[in-house]
Length: 622
Image 1: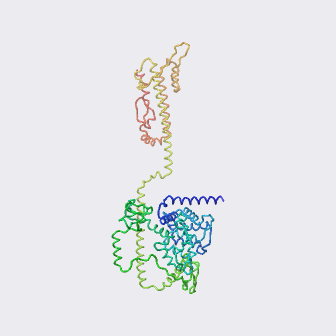
Image 2: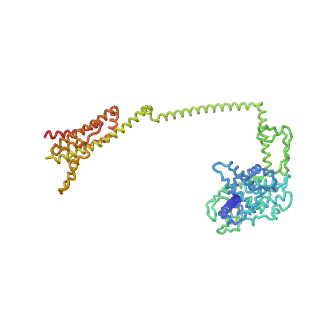
Image 3: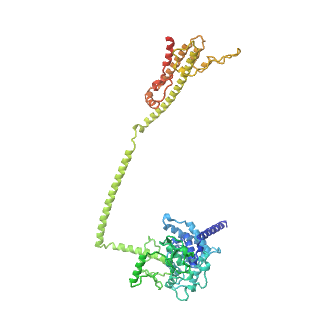
């Protein structure tokens, strides 16, 4: 029950949306009921995508769902109706291109809800076969002549004569369509509707039926049906004429010309809504045009009509034979093999007669069988005619053979050209690629190169650490020499040149109180230096501090030299490669020697002792 209530609410929502879209077009403002009804039903037809479905497609769907074998008064459920509509729209999507596919579910929902609103307003859930055939035949696309022929086949007897009771039922059902779009007062069913179509109760054949409904004007109760087809035909017709009311430079659809006012023409929107301007009145007689003809074309048509002896007008539709259908004689139909797609089998020279009714759907089904039988007959004739080949056919075969040979030669040349193009493309791609180094292809060399790069990085790190320690030692050495200079009897004439640029080391500060000890001693300023330096300064102030400082500097220099020699002895094979790379990538590294700068190389790992030697030679010379 919950699912049924949900589906019912969804169906009502789709129905309300369909009618809301129709009201949004403001079709009720059209003053003529015939055009108003035709426009509304045309909107329903296009919104449900039935204008893309032909009457013959509808007949084929009826045959697939076996409606042609059912009695017209048989009723079936809404689910069966939904299955029929699904077949219609899914087959339509198969015929349409992929860029013009429709929304099948939406089309099914809209059409199903419209049919239920028209023929099952009480919600019984049942609908008859006759109602489905009449409604879909009236709303689908196609020619109106084919529709009327199909309708006549449903309301006539096997002798081809219309049954009045069936025609009355047809009017009763088809006039429910205008009532559903709120046009019941203008086109509702009455008991006099049948008499207005056929006043005299006489024998009505197919031709009389077509004459009645194809005439101009048709019967009043169905005047909207041919107008709906005319609307479909003129939707894309262009008229290069200006509307006299809205002054639109062009018109689409119908064009109306006043028979009293001079050159007064209206577009269909202005005419339908009763717009008028100037001396024109809505009471004037208007002529409807479905196409545009230039003045030259009109003159040529008038001359051709005046000069022709016979009337050039063709009948609007062909005349059909009033004789009843005769049984078809299938005496000369060939035998159908077991592998044929036709399920029926016929024996050669065995008379078989099939009675046909006037139902076009049944006739189509039998025509499919006949087509298959005739195809097999043609196959038999082709196998029999192979033994007799005329001379002209042999000449034709020779010419065809020459053409095939020429085609084969051209195909071979084309293959050779394509192969040559492929070869040239490969050569171009190979030439455009950079050549690969052989060393890059050898995995052993790649592994060695990777190890060398790793060793190079390690050495660079060690060298940077040595450079830092060297820089720290030089700073400490300068501080010691500055301290020695400040404590000595006089300034040395050959003091370090960097001593003028460095900041003086603060001297020990003595407390003014006698009870306090000094806050800093010379031994405290030597904290963080080597043991030999501390030893040199620990023996008292009477000792020559300059000599001790030189001894400590020699010890530091020897220690650094031994460290560099040990480093060089373990990596002699790598030093030459590392030296060239180091010169290119570290050319901007300069050692901090005194106040000057020197170019760094691998030989600079043996730190220069020129400053120390110079400092040692200064006291000796003095």
